[in-house]
Structure formats: structure tokens, C-alpha cells
Amino acid sequence: MERKSKRFTSSWGFVLAAVGSAVGMANVWGFPAKMGSYGGSAFLIAYLVFIVLFGSVGLAAEYAVGRRARTGTLGAYRMAWAAGQPALGKAGGALGWLPLAGSMCIAIGYAVIVAYVLKALVNSLDGTLMTADTAVWFDSFALSGYSVIPLHVIVVAGTLLTLLLGAHSIERTNKIMMPLFFLIFVVLAVRVAFLPGAVEGYRYMFYPRWEELLDPMVWVWAMGQAFFSLSITGSGMIVYGAYLDSGEDVAALARRTALFDTIAALVAALVIIPACFAYGLDVGAGPSLLFVTLPRILQDIPLGRLFAVILYAAMIFAGVSSLQNMFEAVGESLLHRFPKLGRRAVLALLCVVCLGVGLNMEQLPQWGPWMDVVSIYIIPIGATLGAVSWFWILPREALLDEAGRGAKKAPGPLWYALGRYVYVPCAIVLCCVALFLKVAF
Image (cartoon, rainbow, N blue to C red; front, top):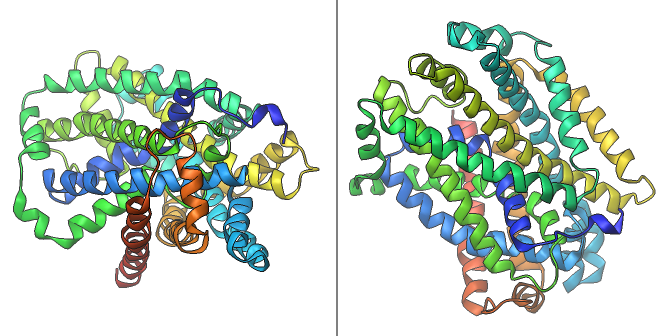
């Protein structure tokens, strides 16, 4: 990889890129849907508990490991396993292929979803979405094969073009996309606040329901949402850490990433949940919230077409910034493993693979199960492998040394104990529960 592409130029540029990776479809429909299905304010309380833990411990560890390895997934696992016993380095490098495969697999499915969003944006601009039966409109392409090919190509090729300069281009694009994303959703949240009945949505979100906290599934789903919302997958955030300057405080940057990611999730919920209560719609509807429910609401409000354009433009920003991280994680690791390829060749290869597989999954019945398999099996296992590798395989002194480099207040024994005895068990529990739920249901 070209050395000029190997660093973020500022801590805020890094945070915006990391937030861009974390903020995505999961924030817009995943967080509101789970909040609506699992106790409202109780889910929010549990979610915030896990965000504090995972953001301050797990995310900081992934940044630190990436910076210490100065490379992405494959090199980081090799480094961690070889640090204690050099003979284990090869095994660690081989292990890193699983979370890396998770990044690529989820990128393939995710690109299809972003293509759907781009179609919604196009049909908002031309007015088609404002007069259509939204359920019929969605089914017309979600249930038909090869229905969004041009848009799919634009999403994949366009995202990969933003990676040509590595960290520099990621930083530049997110400095534009992320502030616009927040601004757009704040505007939408203000508009939704004036809908009759929206106050019931706010009450559901923020009025304490302490009894709901006794339901273990509230905590399990909140834990899973926190893991995936922060993009702690044992892969993606490692590569961003590799691009950090040695003088940066990784713990502080992790806390900032977690803060802004949480704000994004809450702002999205302030749009979705009050709007659903105002119109008597199912807040736990999942992806159909974005493509069926929200368009139906936008059809009924003044300036609905304008707000539809604003909404889907924001979702394009969120989707592309997340795809950037997935592709960069894979691309950097391939460059590290096969340095003679060159960045352009690697990005071209990723384009061919993503489109070659993804074009056969443009139907909802195909990409839905694909994303389920990736999110239920590959990603949780990858996150667990990462957590174990950082806190049980990599020597304690090495992790604390890197996490403390550039820090005003270096993480100490308590931070490490939280990682080893709380964060790692949480990852294992999430992995086991996800596998159990898949088998049981």
C-alpha cells in the first residue's frame, strides 16, 4: 500500500470516519425496531450500559491493536498471537481470515440494501414514490431478480472509488457525509415532532419501565445492538486503528466514536418511533420501516417529497461510509498479504467479487437469509475471536502499552480486567445466544 494513504490527518477526521463506519442501516431501522420490540426505555437503558462498556474497552482495544500492528485484520491477528509465542503467529494469521470474510460477506449484502436506498432516492426525486402504493413499489424490485443492477453497480464502484487514496479519501468524504447525515436527521426529527400523537412515541422512548429490565432478552438484544452499532466485529475497526498516529489517545477516540454513534441512533429513533406512533404503525417492522412505512408517512405530510429526498440522501451517506470500512478492511489486509497487487488491483478485485456475488442476491429472499447467516454466525464469532485474542492471547503489557500511548490518562489494570472478565464473556454470551436463537427458531 502506498505510504501516503496510511494515516488520518486529524483526530476529528478519524472520529468522523469511525462514526461513519458505525452509523448505518442498523442505526436507522435496527435500533428503533429493537427499541420498539424490547421495552422502549428499558432497552435504551440496557443499550447505554453496553455502549459505555464496549466503547471504552472493546473499541479502544481494536484501535490499539490495529495501531500496534500497523496493518489490518490478518496482520493484527498474526501480531497478537505471535507476541506471546512466535510459533503461534501463523495460526493467528489464519484465524484472522474468518472475521475478514465476515466483513466481505456483509459488504456484499449491504451493497444491495444501499442500492435499494438509492432507488428510493431516485424515485423520490422523480416523484414516483410519492404516489405509489409503497408495499407494491417495494415488492416490485425487492422480490424481482436483477432489478436494480445499474444502481447496484453505482453503489459498489462509487464506494470503491472513494478508497483510491486510502485513509485520506475516507477522511475527506466522511468530513462531508457525517455532518450532513446528522443535520438531515435533526431536521427530520424536528418535523416529526409536530405530528399529532408524536408525544406518545417520546413517552415510550423515555418514560422508565423498570420492570422490563427484568427480562433477560432486553439485555441480550441491547448487547447485540451495541456490538454491531459500534462495528466491533474483530475486523473493521482494526484497520482504522492502523491508520492512527502514535500520539493519538485511542481510549478517548473510542469514547468519542461511541458518543456520536449513540447520538446518531437516538436521533434516528426520534424520527422513526414518534412517526410510527403518530400513524399507528408497527415500530418493530425492521427493513420495511425504511421502504414501506416511512414513505407512506412522507406521502401524507406537507413537503413530503422534499423530506423523502432528504431522508434517503442521508441514508446514502450512512450506507456508503459503512461500506467504506468493510471494503477497506478487506482491501488493506489483501495488500498486506499480497503487496505486489497494488491498491487499484485490489479494489478492482473487490468490485468484481462484490458485484459477481451480489447481483445474484438482489431479491429480498436471497439477501435476507445471506445477511442473517453473516450476522448470526460469522460476525459474532469474529467479534469473539477478536476479544479473546486481544485480552487473553496478546500479552497484557503489550496491550496496555499501546492503549496508553498518547493518552492523558492511560488505561490501567481496571480497564484490562473489564476487558478480560466482562467484555470477553459478553462476546461469548452473544455468540452462544445468537447460535441458540438460530437453531431454536
